Amino acid sequence: MNIGFIGLGNMGGGMAANLVKAGHTVRAFDLAEDALARARAHGCETFATVREAVAGVDAVVSMLPNGAIVDAVYAKDVIGHAQASALLLDCSTIDVDTARKVASAAEAAGHAMVDAPVSGGIAAANGGTLTFMVGGTDAAFARAEPILAAMGKAVIHAGASGAGQAAKICNNMILGATMVATCEAFALALKLGLDPQTFYDISSKASGQSWSMTSYCPLPGVGPQSPADNDYQGGFTAALMLKDLKLALAAAASAGAQVPMGTRAEELYAAFAAAGNGGKDFSAIIKTL
Ligand code: NAD
Image (tube, rainbow, N blue to C red; front, side):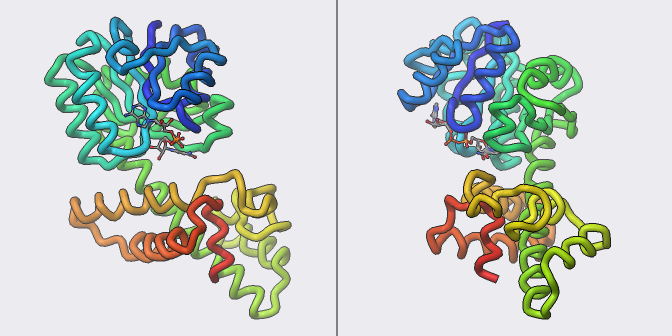
């Protein structure tokens, strides 16, 4: 298949390389020359504009920073420039309303489009082990699944357009809140004189268990290897957690939902990032508790 790929950053670079490995011809574009050079080294053809990259392709995949950029790139250079038969897949994490708006403009121009945000970080993007949460029609999902499967270990149809983004931000709102709850429980356990490993052994088998505790323990030397064991480097940054919490709060406001725990987690991560910690792994918030 000929696939246009837009956005070859930390995530998109590895994803495009995995499409090449799966036998696809990848026509790639990014604003950054170093990203284009890395894509060429992984076997992509690179182009000077989005319009050239998407000319004549069977599918377009994008992995861009935010909703405003996704909206602008699709409106200006993809819709009306890629052939109408091209399937459009946006894998960026963006707000539900923009995802639905872009998909409906694409559909009006004859394209099938899915939102397909990912769970899993840079290592999963490079290793082809991402989980995709997909929003779109049954027919669009059926076309998208084999393309996404070349970049991931799981491809799940979440529902209609926007449902992939909805699942992603609801999931990450749980993650932000449970990470803060796990951090403050460890901090309290230490102050109460509990041995942290003993507390982990108990709580990881009791009702306080969560992914934040047993897969990503925020305390060094406790539980499985996690960014805490690497001075809170190389995981999921606090800045990206804050981005996802802001998207969750915006969706909650738009849907009229109460999200008191998500709101508090957003306040804590906003303060943490404002203090210069945005580049650290999000579990480093334990240092403030
Ligand atoms: P990144 O900043 O490393 O990459 C984004 C790329 O998009 C950059 O190379 C940039 O040059 C390019 N870009 C920006 N504007 C462009 C435009 N108009 N046209 C073409 N290219 C443009 O970001 P990332 O970490 O790869 O994240 C990409 C998306 O994946 C985000 O939506 C993020 O929330 C999501 N995500 C990231 C992670 C992670 O761990 N990094 C995990 C899950 C989801």
